[in-house]
Image 1 (spheres, rainbow, N blue to C red):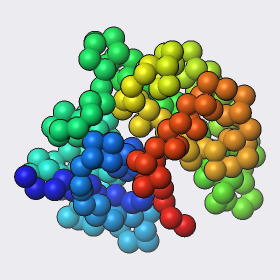
Image 2 (cartoon, one colour):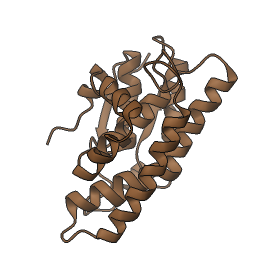
Image 3 (spheres, rainbow, N blue to C red):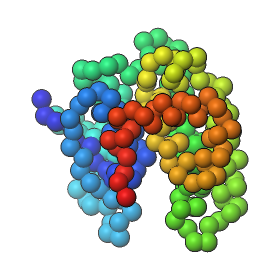
Length: 208
């Protein structure tokens, strides 16, 4: 069976989610670098893999996918290795809810409005950061309310919900405001420390 191919950049939160899924399953893969923020336009050939020119895109034995949650679920179901989705319908629904919440309400606020704005803009837009922090606080409150008892977001076993949340929160805490806010949510801070210690997290960390 051919090695799966992942297209994207190592700085991308969503590429990292897919990479962590592959790592947790113990699957060898090829990462084809693609910087969608480069000065050149997105290459025409890539639009055959992702018609909207975003990352990541995925290919396995001629089967192509885009959208990170779809890629992660395919990886979990198509390959041998530890199961990364709950067995029961309610658990799978909660997993999808957490990922969807983070996509809709967490990613933009935590990554772009707070972390990227603080790290890469001079001067930073303090109003944008303040708004992002307000949204981030709501996201962390909701994540706390949804977290099940146990080491991971859905209980005693790591799932795609954990792998979806970790890169987003990991980017958020690159800045002091993010670290300070995470420190106010003890359950999520303890969860983050556990997942940050996973080999899958270390092996997908972007090297500066």
